[in-house]
Image (tube, rainbow, N blue to C red; front, side):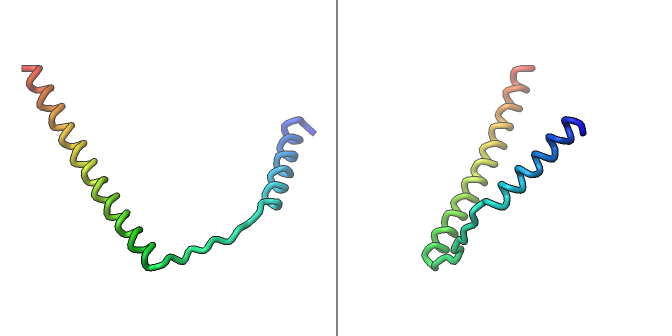
Length: 73
């Protein structure tokens, strides 16, 4: 058997051992009304910030284009 095949087999055995011994935890995903309100508010803030970022990027590109045109004249 070649060294590469031996390494592959050992790697598979190591991965199986790690997968079988990993601890599993249950997570409670139920949110209260207050947490949902906070999450909605944060989501709205994130979407506003994303829109402002897009607008800022477009304005920066417009300025770069005008400066390029002005300097090439």
